[in-house]
Length: 269
Length: 309
Ligand SMILES: Nc1ncnc2c1ncn2[C@@H]1O[C@H](COP(=O)(O)OP(=O)(O)O)[C@@H](O)[C@H]1O
Ligand SMILES: [Mg+2]
Image 1 (tube, each protein chain N blue to C red):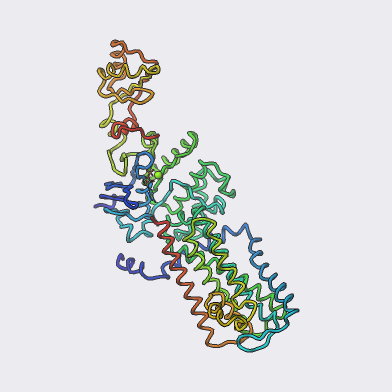
Image 2: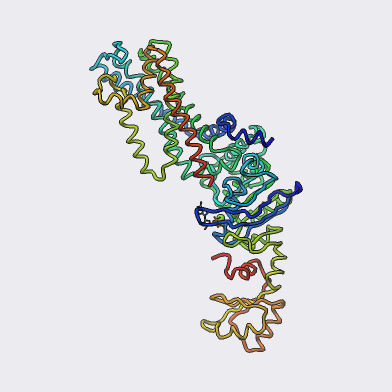
């Protein structure tokens, strides 16, 4: 038995998945009294959609995408907002919330006294964040569809794609959070997220950026999320999208593994 | 070694950088015992408890809990332990009963099992009326009892209690002790740390006295008192500045005398005899109190300091 147990410790995820779901359950239970909060996560991107997509769209009318098609501005920007809101939701969950649980509530100290381990906590927190993300992005997509901005069946894949964006940002955000020791450090997160939100080919196609900056834009994780979402929602699907998928998934894995290690370093001293 | 040994430590050590918090302790706890670590703040009690609770790796020495090695079988050991840490760490986003439900699920218990146990545990913790309340407004004593109830949700074979009554008022302490007696009676092995000598005397069948990360004595409360103290103690208080003048005379009639800033402690087999002898020598204290020796006296004898500062 011990030989098996010893071997199991070196196998990455499966052993952890079983207990991670109870970390999710804890969050679901805690959230039962705060259903209204769920709404706020949905409302913001929809406001953006109507103010920027529809409002600005009345001025700009059409855009030529990086793949060369001409589309109404609102259709161009809707998928980007989906990606951006997946990012924002995941960042909020994995930074502020996790920081509070880690440093103030000492929730994880209490959990680690049970058979649940650091990896279960990291995986559980991400899963919980993704569950909410799935709900938000499905609702957003429905609104966009009702508003007549969605025409392709490929758009259904936009929801799993939004989860991938959530995974990447949630995991990396959580990893970063484990290095923070005060609320001031959150300014760095804002400093990273805000420009990304504005300049990841979110509101204009990549080709409108100065050539010298294009590579920088294309290197940001949100760019990959936006490009993936836009291709799916506009139905411009190609094998090339797998590159975005790979990039985001890799970030997710790095973040989850890093977070597990950091939780162990911080709390199992 | 038999199944009866639940905790076995040899040369157990914990260092933080070049500071040694636990300095090579040997401990053996058997099933059904109430075992204590008695020592002042900073003695290394919590550090020891965290190693036993498998949330802190030992720096050196050997540690076996339930026959297993924490470095290898941490989750399996934790599944059979109940841990009541020094700080409550309850989940303030949850209600009283949800704290028990959710914690039980962390042990992989089914929803049904957890709900069934919750009623009993709430009853045990005398919190049935508060089951739907949030945790935050509960009194310190209630929070402690909830923490203990939560630690019992997996029917642990061993319950670790790190300073269970520190910070509670006397009334709340007695309620808590009563709960712990019950557990003891039901056969749960208790491992308790405390810096209260009365708590150690009340609860522990056997204990070690810890100081600066080392074990300085070991035995039952009775044995420790018999070995390291006398049967009785006379506490003498003098008018300001008078104490020093009388020390020599007092030393003449007793086995041992400890000088504290505000009083003299005179160690003797028979307090009344000692008082009479002092009277004969013309020693007239402001007040004189004869009492039995306690673990506090043991600690004073062993370390030259008092337990609570
Ligand atoms: N994580 C830590 N890092 C550095 N020093 C620590 C840490 N935990 C405890 N110590 C030190 O170890 C000593 C023993 O602490 P502790 O085990 O908490 O004692 P007790 O519980 O008996 O009061 C103290 O001097 C404390 O400052
Ligand atoms: Mg302590």
